[in-house]
Amino acid sequence: MPRLAAASLAGTAIEFYDFFVYGTAAALVLGPLFFPTFSPVAGTLAAFATFGVGFVARPLGSVLFGHLGDRRGRRPVLVLSLLLTGASTVAVGCVPAYGSIGMAAPVLLLVLRFLQGLGLGGEWGGAVLLTAEHAPAGRRALWSSFPQVGPALGFVLANGVMLALSESLSDVQFAQWGWRVPFWAAGVLALAGLWLRSSLAESPRFLEIDDHARVPFIEVVRHHGRLVLLTAGALAVGYAVFYAVTTWSLAYATERLGVSRTVMLTCVMAAVVVKGALTPVVALLGDRYGRRPLCLVGCTACALWMLPMVALLGTGEPLLMFVGILVALIAFIIMFGVIAAYLPELYEARVRCTGAAVGYNLGGVLGGALTPIVATALAEHGGRVPWSVGVYLTGIALLSLVCFALLPETRPVLAPAAEQTQADRAGRAKG
Image (cartoon, rainbow, N blue to C red; front, side, top):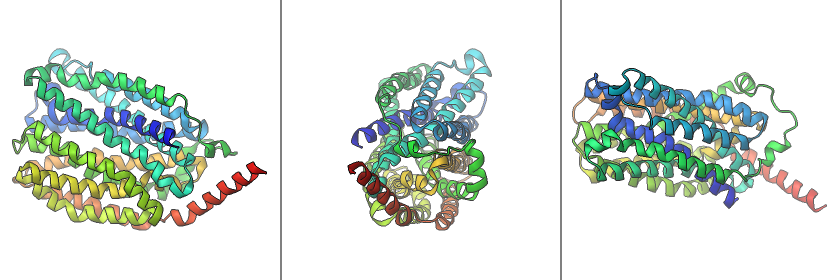
């Protein structure tokens, strides 16, 4: 399990590095380079629109790679999704700016972002299921939390590279070529990830399935449609909070408040490090007290904290901004620290890769794709403190709270049964 968890963590870190480095570039530099005829705010909105395309592609990637994962195994998903995401990320770093090729530049950016999202849509389901289906039931949330640490590592790596380049280069050098370096580095990281994943064993639960679904997505829609919609609505707040903090706040603080890139990136990165460190701790609580109670607590905390968070962001004071961001991410991880165990347990094994991944990534469309765009537009028409952004985020949190309340708990029902199954197999092996 430690080796498997480490490989899954490394893979998700690499793929989310690819995804996050685009978000940071969209907040800091892509607007003027690819949409120079727009006003500064309109250019940022256009850059965030290309950012949102990646989220729209993620559910499609879930269907495509979920079919592969439910029909052929979880392991092939990990390899193919990593290849697709890595190649498209490297290609983003090679796209000439608008000044060189005109409208072809933003069009290419849009296509590559779509392919990047397509690959990431398959990554989460494959990595989480491979870990969750190997893990002992009594520690499933703990072991499944390690792929969930990957996004934090990917974010810190992506923003750390961006921060180092923006500090060591002039503004002109950073705009000309410096921002491209993190995208090119994705190729090296993808090769490292492929090497780590090349020797992983297939999920034992997948190998036990006798009747594979012919078209998993159709079966999910027919028999688990309500569950997919509830999980998507429940997870929307996590995406909204995370991308409000890590993407929108960068653009807001640097463009509206005059906070330096270095200060803002440092605040966000420090908070994300704490979030990543707390993930296994929250997962242990999920194994002890259940998945749903923690999701309800985290969602409630998000609803209560969104208005104070935007008030602290509006001060422009680094320490207060850090506190606002940190508490928001702690509330976020109280939910998402157990999601990697919760979602797979909600779906039967024969369609689990499709169902869990589609629900997870539809939540990304609802919460992640729209939040930077909506928040930027709302903040433009507000004062120094964007209260309307806080109201918007609070509304999403309340919607998600209702969805979590309608979902069942899985630990008391499914985990003991899984433990008994493992005990039976161990007894048969001894016999």
